[in-house]
Length: 170
Image (cartoon, rainbow, N blue to C red; front, side, top):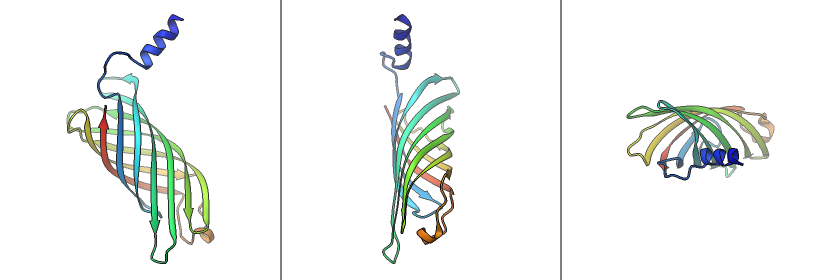
């Protein structure tokens, strides 16, 4: 029983700690259709934090709505989980990680759920302990081919994305 209590205290400390959770929003731009969108995420620091590097897990959603001149709609929604390692420096905090998730891609006659893995990397600019703007790039590999006969677009299953946003830590 004491072991369970010790594990609970380590994972969910009762004492007040600063900035273990964070939430963020971003403007997103992808290399493929649909190109622009927005994202929201929530993250939690893991108990493995050192003086120069820390680990966190984050969960998020990115939404990419779009429309072309000929009234064809392009939509993509992605749910993901990241494992992020952050380097702690004074004025910047670079980070990198691994990402996996599932998304719904709807482009013309192509309407499918696809799984993906990715590698995000970015940098946060701490203004205060609680507010941090960030920029991020990510390379993503979708486990589906986008049939050009259905999409009427040449969409690659290997895509790049960029994000710019704001993080609030609490």
